[in-house]
Image (tube, rainbow, N blue to C red; front, top):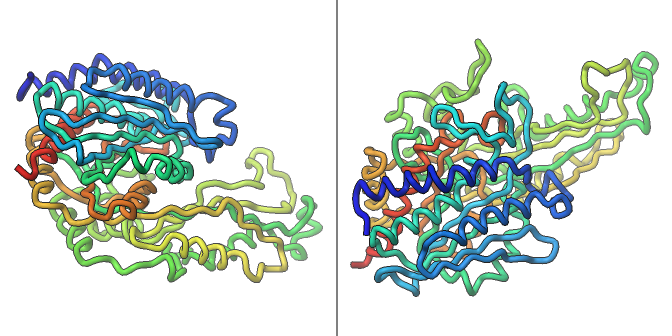
Length: 475
Protein backbone atom coordinates (compact mmCIF):
# COMPACT_ATOMS: atom_id res chain seq x y z
CA UNK A 1 0.00 0.00 0.00
CA UNK A 2 1.23 3.50 -0.83
CA UNK A 3 0.24 6.76 0.86
CA UNK A 4 0.72 10.49 0.63
CA UNK A 5 3.72 11.60 -1.35
CA UNK A 6 4.20 8.04 -2.59
CA UNK A 7 0.87 8.31 -4.40
CA UNK A 8 2.10 11.33 -6.33
CA UNK A 9 5.40 9.56 -7.04
CA UNK A 10 3.52 6.58 -8.43
CA UNK A 11 1.41 8.82 -10.68
CA UNK A 12 4.51 10.64 -11.89
CA UNK A 13 6.22 7.34 -12.62
CA UNK A 14 3.31 5.90 -14.60
CA UNK A 15 2.98 9.10 -16.60
CA UNK A 16 6.69 9.29 -17.39
CA UNK A 17 7.29 5.62 -18.12
CA UNK A 18 3.97 4.35 -19.48
CA UNK A 19 1.56 7.10 -20.49
CA UNK A 20 3.84 9.55 -22.27
CA UNK A 21 5.33 6.91 -24.63
CA UNK A 22 1.81 5.70 -25.41
CA UNK A 23 0.65 9.25 -26.08
CA UNK A 24 3.58 9.73 -28.45
CA UNK A 25 2.40 6.71 -30.43
CA UNK A 26 -1.21 7.89 -30.27
CA UNK A 27 -0.44 11.40 -31.54
CA UNK A 28 1.36 9.90 -34.56
CA UNK A 29 -1.90 8.24 -35.72
CA UNK A 30 -4.00 10.53 -38.00
CA UNK A 31 -7.31 9.12 -36.79
CA UNK A 32 -9.51 12.10 -37.57
CA UNK A 33 -13.16 11.69 -36.66
CA UNK A 34 -15.58 10.11 -39.11
CA UNK A 35 -17.10 13.45 -40.17
CA UNK A 36 -13.70 14.28 -41.68
CA UNK A 37 -12.84 10.82 -42.97
CA UNK A 38 -15.78 8.99 -44.48
CA UNK A 39 -13.52 6.00 -45.17
CA UNK A 40 -12.20 5.78 -41.61
CA UNK A 41 -12.70 2.01 -41.45
CA UNK A 42 -10.99 1.40 -44.79
CA UNK A 43 -8.05 3.65 -43.89
CA UNK A 44 -7.54 1.86 -40.58
CA UNK A 45 -6.26 4.78 -38.51
CA UNK A 46 -9.13 4.63 -36.02
CA UNK A 47 -8.64 0.91 -35.59
CA UNK A 48 -4.95 1.50 -34.83
CA UNK A 49 -5.79 4.11 -32.19
CA UNK A 50 -8.43 1.87 -30.62
CA UNK A 51 -6.03 -1.06 -30.43
CA UNK A 52 -3.27 1.10 -28.95
CA UNK A 53 -5.56 2.30 -26.16
CA UNK A 54 -7.20 -1.09 -25.64
CA UNK A 55 -3.91 -2.95 -25.28
CA UNK A 56 -2.45 -0.33 -22.93
CA UNK A 57 -5.50 -0.47 -20.68
CA UNK A 58 -5.71 -4.26 -20.70
CA UNK A 59 -2.14 -4.51 -19.40
CA UNK A 60 -2.70 -2.42 -16.28
CA UNK A 61 -2.44 -4.22 -12.88
CA UNK A 62 -6.01 -3.44 -11.75
CA UNK A 63 -8.03 -5.97 -9.79
CA UNK A 64 -10.84 -7.53 -11.84
CA UNK A 65 -10.10 -5.44 -14.94
CA UNK A 66 -12.06 -6.35 -18.09
CA UNK A 67 -11.41 -4.52 -21.38
CA UNK A 68 -13.19 -5.05 -24.68
CA UNK A 69 -13.94 -3.27 -27.94
CA UNK A 70 -17.67 -3.04 -28.52
CA UNK A 71 -18.58 -3.27 -32.20
CA UNK A 72 -21.77 -2.34 -34.03
CA UNK A 73 -22.27 -2.55 -37.78
CA UNK A 74 -21.36 0.66 -39.62
CA UNK A 75 -20.44 2.41 -36.35
CA UNK A 76 -17.11 3.45 -34.95
CA UNK A 77 -15.98 1.12 -32.14
CA UNK A 78 -16.30 1.86 -28.44
CA UNK A 79 -13.81 0.71 -25.79
CA UNK A 80 -15.67 -0.62 -22.75
CA UNK A 81 -13.81 -1.20 -19.48
CA UNK A 82 -15.39 -2.71 -16.37
CA UNK A 83 -13.72 -2.78 -12.97
CA UNK A 84 -15.45 -4.27 -9.92
CA UNK A 85 -15.72 -2.42 -6.63
CA UNK A 86 -12.61 -2.44 -4.49
CA UNK A 87 -11.83 -2.50 -0.75
CA UNK A 88 -15.40 -2.12 0.48
CA UNK A 89 -16.77 0.05 -2.31
CA UNK A 90 -20.27 -0.71 -3.53
CA UNK A 91 -20.72 -3.17 -6.40
CA UNK A 92 -24.33 -1.99 -6.68
CA UNK A 93 -23.20 1.57 -7.38
CA UNK A 94 -21.44 2.71 -10.54
CA UNK A 95 -18.97 5.43 -11.47
CA UNK A 96 -18.94 6.14 -15.21
CA UNK A 97 -15.71 7.56 -16.63
CA UNK A 98 -15.74 8.96 -20.15
CA UNK A 99 -13.30 10.05 -22.83
CA UNK A 100 -12.79 9.86 -26.58
CA UNK A 101 -9.91 9.06 -28.91
CA UNK A 102 -11.00 10.44 -32.29
CA UNK A 103 -9.38 13.69 -33.41
CA UNK A 104 -10.08 16.93 -35.20
CA UNK A 105 -8.42 17.51 -38.60
CA UNK A 106 -4.86 18.77 -38.93
CA UNK A 107 -5.55 22.52 -39.34
CA UNK A 108 -3.02 24.92 -40.83
CA UNK A 109 -0.63 27.18 -38.93
CA UNK A 110 1.54 24.84 -36.84
CA UNK A 111 4.75 26.61 -36.00
CA UNK A 112 8.12 25.41 -37.19
CA UNK A 113 9.15 22.14 -35.58
CA UNK A 114 5.59 21.13 -34.67
CA UNK A 115 2.85 19.28 -36.51
CA UNK A 116 -0.44 17.51 -35.82
CA UNK A 117 1.05 14.00 -36.04
CA UNK A 118 4.44 14.88 -34.59
CA UNK A 119 4.67 14.52 -30.79
CA UNK A 120 7.08 17.05 -29.29
CA UNK A 121 7.69 17.90 -25.63
CA UNK A 122 8.75 21.47 -24.88
CA UNK A 123 8.74 23.09 -21.43
CA UNK A 124 6.49 20.42 -19.96
CA UNK A 125 4.01 20.58 -22.84
CA UNK A 126 3.28 17.66 -25.16
CA UNK A 127 2.38 19.10 -28.56
CA UNK A 128 0.34 17.23 -31.17
CA UNK A 129 -3.24 16.67 -32.21
CA UNK A 130 -5.47 14.88 -29.75
CA UNK A 131 -3.18 14.54 -26.76
CA UNK A 132 -5.17 16.99 -24.65
CA UNK A 133 -8.47 16.59 -26.53
CA UNK A 134 -8.60 14.05 -25.22
CA UNK A 135 -6.41 11.09 -25.90
CA UNK A 136 -4.97 11.27 -22.41
CA UNK A 137 -8.38 10.49 -20.86
CA UNK A 138 -8.24 6.70 -21.09
CA UNK A 139 -4.70 6.59 -19.68
CA UNK A 140 -5.45 9.02 -16.84
CA UNK A 141 -8.71 7.28 -15.92
CA UNK A 142 -7.13 3.83 -15.64
CA UNK A 143 -4.14 5.25 -13.78
CA UNK A 144 -6.41 6.97 -11.26
CA UNK A 145 -8.10 3.65 -10.51
CA UNK A 146 -4.80 1.77 -10.42
CA UNK A 147 -3.30 4.25 -7.97
CA UNK A 148 -6.43 4.26 -5.81
CA UNK A 149 -6.16 0.51 -5.45
CA UNK A 150 -2.42 0.64 -4.74
CA UNK A 151 -3.10 3.19 -2.00
CA UNK A 152 -5.81 1.00 -0.47
CA UNK A 153 -8.57 3.46 -1.29
CA UNK A 154 -12.09 2.17 -1.78
CA UNK A 155 -13.95 2.74 -5.01
CA UNK A 156 -17.33 1.66 -6.34
CA UNK A 157 -17.79 -0.36 -9.48
CA UNK A 158 -16.31 1.59 -12.41
CA UNK A 159 -17.25 1.59 -16.09
CA UNK A 160 -14.99 3.43 -18.53
CA UNK A 161 -16.26 4.33 -22.01
CA UNK A 162 -13.83 5.63 -24.64
CA UNK A 163 -15.67 6.52 -27.83
CA UNK A 164 -14.43 7.21 -31.36
CA UNK A 165 -16.95 9.70 -32.79
CA UNK A 166 -17.10 12.60 -30.31
CA UNK A 167 -15.49 15.12 -32.65
CA UNK A 168 -18.27 14.36 -35.14
CA UNK A 169 -20.99 15.05 -32.56
CA UNK A 170 -21.08 11.49 -31.14
CA UNK A 171 -23.45 10.11 -33.81
CA UNK A 172 -22.46 6.51 -33.02
CA UNK A 173 -22.65 6.72 -29.25
CA UNK A 174 -26.43 6.46 -28.69
CA UNK A 175 -26.58 3.07 -30.42
CA UNK A 176 -23.75 1.80 -28.22
CA UNK A 177 -25.50 3.11 -25.10
CA UNK A 178 -28.70 1.28 -26.01
CA UNK A 179 -26.79 -1.95 -26.58
CA UNK A 180 -24.83 -1.57 -23.33
CA UNK A 181 -27.60 -0.21 -21.11
CA UNK A 182 -27.64 -3.23 -18.81
CA UNK A 183 -23.87 -3.29 -18.37
CA UNK A 184 -23.57 0.43 -17.69
CA UNK A 185 -26.11 0.31 -14.88
CA UNK A 186 -27.25 3.49 -13.17
CA UNK A 187 -24.23 5.68 -12.44
CA UNK A 188 -24.37 7.94 -9.41
CA UNK A 189 -21.18 9.73 -10.49
CA UNK A 190 -19.92 10.65 -13.96
CA UNK A 191 -16.29 11.68 -14.50
CA UNK A 192 -15.34 13.23 -17.83
CA UNK A 193 -11.87 14.49 -18.81
CA UNK A 194 -12.78 16.21 -22.08
CA UNK A 195 -13.15 19.78 -20.83
CA UNK A 196 -10.88 22.70 -19.98
CA UNK A 197 -9.53 24.90 -17.22
CA UNK A 198 -8.91 28.59 -16.73
CA UNK A 199 -5.44 27.98 -15.29
CA UNK A 200 -3.26 25.03 -14.28
CA UNK A 201 -3.16 25.93 -10.58
CA UNK A 202 -6.26 24.10 -9.36
CA UNK A 203 -8.93 21.57 -10.24
CA UNK A 204 -11.47 23.23 -12.53
CA UNK A 205 -14.94 21.72 -12.83
CA UNK A 206 -17.22 22.57 -15.72
CA UNK A 207 -20.78 23.54 -14.79
CA UNK A 208 -22.20 23.95 -18.29
CA UNK A 209 -21.45 23.06 -21.90
CA UNK A 210 -22.84 24.62 -25.03
CA UNK A 211 -24.84 22.71 -27.61
CA UNK A 212 -24.01 22.69 -31.29
CA UNK A 213 -25.78 22.98 -34.64
CA UNK A 214 -23.92 22.86 -37.94
CA UNK A 215 -24.62 22.66 -41.64
CA UNK A 216 -23.23 23.45 -45.07
CA UNK A 217 -25.16 26.13 -46.97
CA UNK A 218 -24.65 26.41 -50.73
CA UNK A 219 -25.95 29.15 -53.01
CA UNK A 220 -25.81 28.35 -56.72
CA UNK A 221 -26.77 30.93 -59.36
CA UNK A 222 -25.08 29.53 -62.52
CA UNK A 223 -24.37 26.12 -63.98
CA UNK A 224 -20.77 27.13 -64.74
CA UNK A 225 -18.41 30.06 -64.19
CA UNK A 226 -18.63 33.00 -66.61
CA UNK A 227 -16.54 36.06 -67.48
CA UNK A 228 -17.05 38.57 -64.69
CA UNK A 229 -16.81 41.53 -67.07
CA UNK A 230 -19.67 40.24 -69.18
CA UNK A 231 -21.94 38.93 -66.41
CA UNK A 232 -21.46 41.16 -63.35
CA UNK A 233 -24.33 43.57 -62.98
CA UNK A 234 -26.66 41.03 -64.50
CA UNK A 235 -25.83 37.90 -62.55
CA UNK A 236 -25.65 38.22 -58.79
CA UNK A 237 -22.47 37.00 -57.09
CA UNK A 238 -23.05 33.71 -55.32
CA UNK A 239 -20.96 35.07 -52.47
CA UNK A 240 -23.33 38.03 -52.08
CA UNK A 241 -26.28 35.68 -52.06
CA UNK A 242 -24.71 33.68 -49.26
CA UNK A 243 -23.96 36.93 -47.46
CA UNK A 244 -27.65 37.87 -47.66
CA UNK A 245 -28.58 34.49 -46.22
CA UNK A 246 -26.17 35.00 -43.33
CA UNK A 247 -27.81 38.36 -42.60
CA UNK A 248 -30.99 36.44 -41.78
CA UNK A 249 -29.33 34.58 -38.91
CA UNK A 250 -26.62 36.96 -37.63
CA UNK A 251 -26.11 40.68 -37.15
CA UNK A 252 -22.86 41.29 -39.02
CA UNK A 253 -22.03 44.37 -36.92
CA UNK A 254 -22.55 42.97 -33.42
CA UNK A 255 -22.31 39.21 -34.00
CA UNK A 256 -25.67 38.69 -32.28
CA UNK A 257 -27.60 35.67 -33.54
CA UNK A 258 -31.03 36.83 -34.69
CA UNK A 259 -33.00 33.59 -34.34
CA UNK A 260 -35.02 33.54 -31.12
CA UNK A 261 -35.04 29.73 -30.98
CA UNK A 262 -31.30 29.86 -30.32
CA UNK A 263 -31.56 32.09 -27.24
CA UNK A 264 -32.39 31.16 -23.63
CA UNK A 265 -32.72 33.03 -20.37
CA UNK A 266 -29.44 32.73 -18.49
CA UNK A 267 -29.98 31.21 -15.01
CA UNK A 268 -29.20 33.68 -12.19
CA UNK A 269 -26.77 31.24 -10.55
CA UNK A 270 -24.70 31.06 -13.73
CA UNK A 271 -24.58 34.85 -13.98
CA UNK A 272 -23.40 35.02 -10.36
CA UNK A 273 -20.84 32.27 -11.04
CA UNK A 274 -19.39 34.17 -14.01
CA UNK A 275 -19.12 37.37 -12.01
CA UNK A 276 -17.44 35.60 -9.08
CA UNK A 277 -14.92 33.87 -11.34
CA UNK A 278 -14.16 37.10 -13.21
CA UNK A 279 -13.60 39.00 -9.98
CA UNK A 280 -11.23 36.38 -8.57
CA UNK A 281 -9.08 35.96 -11.68
CA UNK A 282 -7.77 39.26 -13.01
CA UNK A 283 -6.89 38.07 -16.54
CA UNK A 284 -10.05 38.08 -18.68
CA UNK A 285 -10.79 35.11 -20.95
CA UNK A 286 -9.84 37.21 -23.98
CA UNK A 287 -6.24 37.38 -22.76
CA UNK A 288 -5.61 33.74 -23.73
CA UNK A 289 -6.26 34.27 -27.46
CA UNK A 290 -3.57 35.23 -30.01
CA UNK A 291 -5.07 38.50 -31.24
CA UNK A 292 -3.11 40.45 -33.84
CA UNK A 293 -1.66 43.76 -32.70
CA UNK A 294 -4.42 46.30 -32.16
CA UNK A 295 -7.32 43.81 -32.28
CA UNK A 296 -9.96 43.84 -29.55
CA UNK A 297 -12.48 41.32 -28.20
CA UNK A 298 -16.18 41.67 -28.98
CA UNK A 299 -16.92 42.53 -25.33
CA UNK A 300 -14.59 44.04 -22.74
CA UNK A 301 -16.08 43.10 -19.37
CA UNK A 302 -14.52 39.80 -18.10
CA UNK A 303 -17.81 38.49 -16.69
CA UNK A 304 -19.56 39.25 -19.96
CA UNK A 305 -16.80 37.43 -21.82
CA UNK A 306 -17.44 34.34 -19.70
CA UNK A 307 -21.16 34.54 -20.40
CA UNK A 308 -20.64 35.24 -24.10
CA UNK A 309 -18.61 32.05 -24.52
CA UNK A 310 -21.00 29.89 -22.53
CA UNK A 311 -24.62 31.13 -22.53
CA UNK A 312 -25.12 33.15 -25.71
CA UNK A 313 -25.49 31.65 -29.20
CA UNK A 314 -22.78 32.32 -31.75
CA UNK A 315 -22.08 31.65 -35.41
CA UNK A 316 -18.66 30.79 -36.83
CA UNK A 317 -17.81 30.17 -40.48
CA UNK A 318 -15.44 27.22 -40.28
CA UNK A 319 -15.09 26.22 -43.92
CA UNK A 320 -15.63 27.39 -47.49
CA UNK A 321 -15.85 25.76 -50.92
CA UNK A 322 -16.24 27.06 -54.44
CA UNK A 323 -13.68 29.83 -54.01
CA UNK A 324 -10.22 29.36 -55.55
CA UNK A 325 -7.04 30.39 -53.80
CA UNK A 326 -6.16 34.03 -54.49
CA UNK A 327 -3.05 32.94 -56.34
CA UNK A 328 -5.14 31.28 -59.06
CA UNK A 329 -8.30 33.42 -58.94
CA UNK A 330 -9.22 34.59 -62.43
CA UNK A 331 -11.78 37.21 -63.49
CA UNK A 332 -14.62 34.72 -63.25
CA UNK A 333 -18.07 35.03 -61.74
CA UNK A 334 -18.24 31.73 -59.87
CA UNK A 335 -21.34 29.53 -60.13
CA UNK A 336 -21.67 28.75 -56.42
CA UNK A 337 -20.37 29.38 -52.92
CA UNK A 338 -20.58 26.96 -49.99
CA UNK A 339 -19.98 27.83 -46.34
CA UNK A 340 -19.72 25.55 -43.34
CA UNK A 341 -21.70 27.10 -40.49
CA UNK A 342 -21.06 26.24 -36.87
CA UNK A 343 -23.58 27.52 -34.33
CA UNK A 344 -22.79 27.22 -30.64
CA UNK A 345 -25.99 26.99 -28.60
CA UNK A 346 -26.68 27.89 -24.96
CA UNK A 347 -26.58 24.88 -22.62
CA UNK A 348 -30.35 24.63 -22.13
CA UNK A 349 -31.32 25.43 -25.73
CA UNK A 350 -33.48 22.87 -27.57
CA UNK A 351 -30.93 21.84 -30.19
CA UNK A 352 -33.48 20.18 -32.47
CA UNK A 353 -35.64 23.30 -32.52
CA UNK A 354 -32.55 25.42 -33.13
CA UNK A 355 -31.51 23.30 -36.11
CA UNK A 356 -35.00 23.52 -37.58
CA UNK A 357 -35.00 27.32 -37.18
CA UNK A 358 -31.63 27.60 -38.90
CA UNK A 359 -32.77 25.47 -41.83
CA UNK A 360 -35.98 27.46 -42.24
CA UNK A 361 -34.21 30.82 -42.13
CA UNK A 362 -31.63 29.86 -44.73
CA UNK A 363 -33.74 27.90 -47.17
CA UNK A 364 -36.89 29.95 -47.79
CA UNK A 365 -37.32 32.60 -50.51
CA UNK A 366 -33.81 32.43 -51.99
CA UNK A 367 -32.43 35.75 -53.33
CA UNK A 368 -32.65 36.04 -57.13
CA UNK A 369 -34.24 32.62 -57.30
CA UNK A 370 -30.89 30.97 -56.67
CA UNK A 371 -30.71 27.32 -55.71
CA UNK A 372 -29.98 27.13 -51.99
CA UNK A 373 -29.20 23.78 -50.41
CA UNK A 374 -28.62 22.90 -46.77
CA UNK A 375 -26.49 19.80 -46.32
CA UNK A 376 -25.13 17.85 -43.35
CA UNK A 377 -27.47 19.57 -40.90
CA UNK A 378 -26.88 18.15 -37.44
CA UNK A 379 -27.16 19.24 -33.85
CA UNK A 380 -26.11 18.11 -30.39
CA UNK A 381 -27.38 18.99 -26.92
CA UNK A 382 -25.75 21.26 -24.41
CA UNK A 383 -25.71 20.56 -20.70
CA UNK A 384 -26.21 22.42 -17.43
CA UNK A 385 -24.87 20.74 -14.30
CA UNK A 386 -27.09 19.84 -11.36
CA UNK A 387 -26.06 21.33 -8.00
CA UNK A 388 -23.14 19.56 -6.34
CA UNK A 389 -24.04 17.24 -3.48
CA UNK A 390 -22.36 18.33 -0.22
CA UNK A 391 -20.01 15.33 -0.27
CA UNK A 392 -18.87 16.14 -3.81
CA UNK A 393 -18.35 19.82 -3.15
CA UNK A 394 -16.09 18.91 -0.25
CA UNK A 395 -14.33 16.16 -2.21
CA UNK A 396 -13.45 18.54 -5.05
CA UNK A 397 -11.74 20.96 -2.66
CA UNK A 398 -9.93 18.18 -0.81
CA UNK A 399 -8.65 16.68 -4.06
CA UNK A 400 -7.59 20.03 -5.47
CA UNK A 401 -5.79 21.06 -2.28
CA UNK A 402 -4.00 17.71 -2.08
CA UNK A 403 -2.68 17.75 -5.64
CA UNK A 404 -2.69 21.41 -6.73
CA UNK A 405 -2.43 23.26 -3.42
CA UNK A 406 -5.49 25.44 -4.16
CA UNK A 407 -9.25 24.90 -3.75
CA UNK A 408 -11.31 23.76 -6.72
CA UNK A 409 -13.19 26.28 -8.86
CA UNK A 410 -16.04 26.07 -11.35
CA UNK A 411 -16.81 27.71 -14.68
CA UNK A 412 -18.93 27.32 -17.81
CA UNK A 413 -17.21 25.86 -20.86
CA UNK A 414 -17.82 27.04 -24.41
CA UNK A 415 -17.31 23.67 -26.09
CA UNK A 416 -19.70 20.78 -26.61
CA UNK A 417 -19.61 17.23 -25.26
CA UNK A 418 -22.79 15.61 -26.62
CA UNK A 419 -22.47 12.64 -24.27
CA UNK A 420 -23.14 14.82 -21.24
CA UNK A 421 -26.51 15.91 -22.55
CA UNK A 422 -27.36 12.30 -23.31
CA UNK A 423 -26.34 11.17 -19.83
CA UNK A 424 -28.27 13.95 -18.12
CA UNK A 425 -31.46 12.58 -19.69
CA UNK A 426 -30.60 8.96 -18.95
CA UNK A 427 -29.41 9.51 -15.37
CA UNK A 428 -31.02 12.67 -13.95
CA UNK A 429 -29.91 11.88 -10.39
CA UNK A 430 -26.22 11.46 -11.19
CA UNK A 431 -23.50 13.83 -10.02
CA UNK A 432 -21.10 15.11 -12.68
CA UNK A 433 -17.43 16.06 -12.55
CA UNK A 434 -16.55 17.43 -15.98
CA UNK A 435 -12.96 18.56 -16.03
CA UNK A 436 -9.88 18.62 -18.22
CA UNK A 437 -6.49 20.09 -19.06
CA UNK A 438 -7.37 22.43 -21.93
CA UNK A 439 -6.07 25.61 -20.36
CA UNK A 440 -5.10 28.97 -21.85
CA UNK A 441 -3.24 28.56 -25.12
CA UNK A 442 -3.68 24.79 -25.34
CA UNK A 443 -5.64 25.38 -28.57
CA UNK A 444 -7.76 22.27 -29.00
CA UNK A 445 -8.86 21.85 -32.64
CA UNK A 446 -6.31 24.44 -33.76
CA UNK A 447 -2.60 24.49 -34.54
CA UNK A 448 -0.05 23.93 -31.77
CA UNK A 449 -2.44 21.99 -29.51
CA UNK A 450 -0.66 20.89 -26.36
CA UNK A 451 -1.15 18.85 -23.22
CA UNK A 452 0.21 20.35 -19.99
CA UNK A 453 1.85 17.26 -18.53
CA UNK A 454 2.14 18.52 -14.95
CA UNK A 455 -1.52 19.54 -14.92
CA UNK A 456 -2.55 16.15 -16.30
CA UNK A 457 -0.60 14.32 -13.59
CA UNK A 458 -2.21 16.38 -10.83
CA UNK A 459 -5.63 15.85 -12.35
CA UNK A 460 -5.02 12.11 -12.34
CA UNK A 461 -4.39 12.27 -8.59
CA UNK A 462 -7.58 14.28 -8.10
CA UNK A 463 -9.58 11.55 -9.81
CA UNK A 464 -8.24 8.93 -7.39
CA UNK A 465 -9.26 11.05 -4.43
CA UNK A 466 -12.73 11.75 -5.85
CA UNK A 467 -13.31 8.03 -6.43
CA UNK A 468 -12.44 7.34 -2.78
CA UNK A 469 -14.67 10.16 -1.54
CA UNK A 470 -17.54 8.84 -3.62
CA UNK A 471 -17.11 5.34 -2.16
CA UNK A 472 -17.10 6.71 1.38
CA UNK A 473 -19.83 9.33 1.03
CA UNK A 474 -22.38 7.41 3.12
CA UNK A 475 -19.98 6.37 5.90
